[in-house]
Image (tube, rainbow over all chains, first blue to last red; front, side):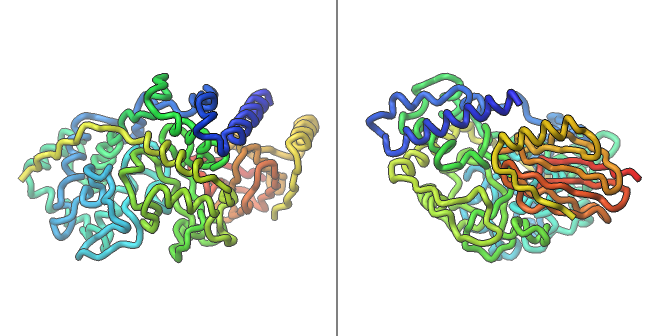
Length: 345
Length: 110
């Protein structure tokens, strides 16, 4: 009960901050820019990447996984790799409204980034995979995506001597198997973590790392705009599923859980890390800019039975909207470009 | 299957919780807090009330698809509580459709 009281007191404090902040920028912003430490502490980065017990990290697994991730021979056309859609040059997305798969056909949903996927409990926009190991083979075997028969894949990789040796050292006693293809890719994916952004430097104590407008945006994000109800913590997602009121016919998680009304048109809350480099937005790429995203949430979207109860009309001012966008831009890290691996022939 | 008590204030909820704890008998209680269940496992008897209390500031959608144990508590707003009774013994994996991190195993004994 004591903990609840503390939380209630803090939320009360935030509401005060929110209402005081509304419409106040820029004249009064200096005083409000000092976000409460109780709030900032919730945004500290984790100290280590979590790896599952049955697929622990080794350098060999990461190296092999990186090769597989960039290898187009994982597709039946030998033309599409995981990196075709999860392109590091576009913060591990593809910059397109919807992904493009086998035969250059457009897919139904946008390619999500793999940034910080290590912290995800449910993969895909609808959460149908419970682990990265469970997820990794999905797009490879999907007829619309990489269209690769898995038995054939083992034959293909087995005919490349370099891979046989790499699997043997990565998974001693097991070697090249379908599950180990997934495990190696998952290991590499877990190492793809967004780097230190100006926001992180501010959280760590550097007051000059982000602008006063962005600091105000952070407060609006956590209060009046209600973004942090779902885009919570250092990775800016709690992994939750919501129908946010987008005009869409895609049932999303409702396809998996057809009896649950609220899951109709529900999609996973994505990370906001490096978000200004990852447009267009939403599961279908239907929203072009971050300003448009903020406008959409401000209206509350399409009211319908399945719409999340967390979604409502916000009544944001133009200044608050601009501050939210300024804040989100501080989440982008200047990462060292990844070295694309040389693949075994 | 489930009966809903819309609890209007945290104060009343606190009182109910206190009473439930004091009385103790005939009802097992699980809370949703900080986007987690208060326990990972819980045991009840057949037809014994299992109370789900949303102590969070967000909504939850608790359900189970375990064979023979299926139920759904439609969206629970903060402060709301619902009671579930299982008509047969078995194991139920209870999840929140909104928050996949939330997992609870319910063992129903005769």
